[in-house]
Image 1 (cartoon, one colour):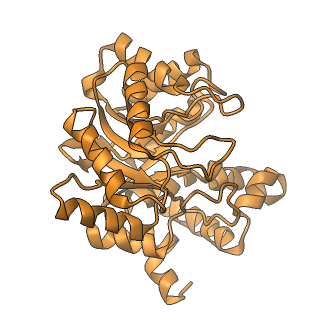
Image 2: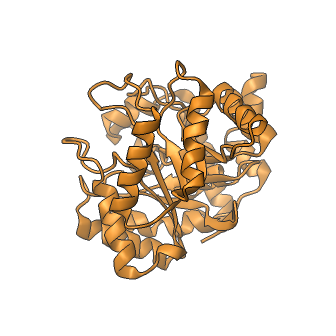
Length: 325
């Protein structure tokens, strides 16, 4: 699997998402998935304090499974481990959990369940723009200083707040944010179920291009929209995918994907992820699956290579800004 530099590491461009481990995906199957991912050369595993059973949320289910797997395989130092905290309660997504006590408590519990002394990068799930950004950065700095994490990042933050945070860090001698985790796929999302999520837009894309900040893409497969559309056709496509991604632009991208498949030999699913991993800034696609065949398919996505021209032929944020289709 292709890797690229991130900090001092060479990190797989396709990361393994573990949101359903301990919920829809039982531990035995989760272990099978991690075994397969590691066997293909993958070394990026992404989890979070709240991942697991989202029907009856129980914090740490995903982390506990990963922690047991890491310990049993004695492979902690071979895995670039990513976890997140500061998530609002599911009953009130507008409720902030970004106090120093809450962030540090989440971090301590994550390390215990992951059975490790540190994670390679730690993220905050959401922002609270009523809280001074300096207060948040001071708390994240404390996690760096006590060795809990090597790097810090944020998810679902507006680009203006990210820039403000890094300006504060730079002027106060603190560690800057190294990456932004954003909802980003080749498909344009037309309906978002959670208004607290931040989706890649032209302003955020431009921030990444200008600063070189790494981008980690969640919902990178758009729930398999293009693969399923290619295999099933529009009429048989699940209603949720029609609702979330049904627009003329995505239908046009589908035709471009089919043409590019004929030119390159890569599958539609691999090309949709390759689009993300070939951005003009470091970019990593977090991907998952519910069947082992879907995990094994990530090998192709991790090996697929496309040119900048092929990437922009699928979808170009620069052209979108200029109003060019």
